[in-house]
Length: 354
Picture 1: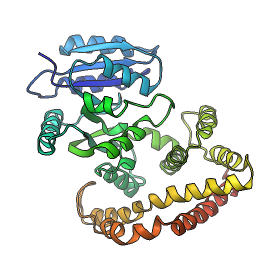
Picture 2 (picture 1 turned 30 degrees about the horizontal axis):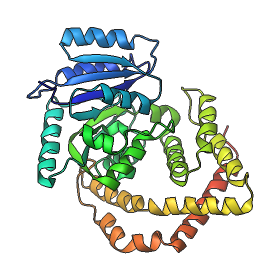
Picture 3 (picture 1 turned 30 degrees about the vertical axis):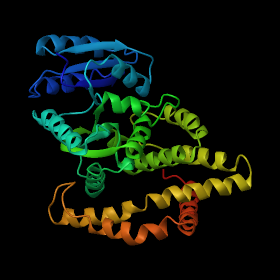
């Protein structure tokens, strides 16, 4: 009998995180057994030894495969080795707070497939951050609430991705031509060719990266990355990777090196290409202006004592009906480009605080 689903976890030196996830997977109450595939990209710590030990102790159906490093490559290889027709991709630092999480998710996904008469459906969970500080409480509320939406620009691998093997291959699998944002590109393809649904419950993940690097700094960098991926400026990612590696993993993220890279690349081919670059950036910013309306909804819902993902989204609905046509017009894109340009150079030229 085939496993009811295959959990695929890409790993690279995850000895601190993977054991916790495996133990939580062992506690999942599912009608039929499932399999776990660890797709390792060359770990040199105790990741694999710990995984095998826990699998033996917990009697998990676990396989370890080795592939070239790169999350997209590893997940594609894990999917290729999977025995089930259902694939669930999880990050190694994910946590499953509920022992019935996966059984409820599978039942929800199957019911939606029956209603639609199609398996062109992918599911994702909501997300909660495990924090050690109460700083930026509203910002975390907002980012957690966004994960409950079914918008492709709000879905990433931290939330888990569950879909059929057939649909996964129809989507072209994870894009391995570029070494970044493979989850975002797959999310966009799902929306273009099928449908996203929010699965019951949520995953949790550590907020340590935000707390060390700075929530605002990390989210600004994430926005830059999404913008450059959207407008096709692939050169930024090579230079940005070098800039990121030069920074300590235990200090606040410094944005200026990334802003300088963007400045140099935008002007590197002359003024006319730079204007086109900024106009495209304005288009990206305008397309994401809905987040301001959604943030206002989050503020209202938080004041009402609701949890992230709960409550009405009236501001967002009004924006979609009345604001979006104007904001995403050519005029709106030009205006957004000007505002972004002013913000960008104000940030770049402001002296760093000592």
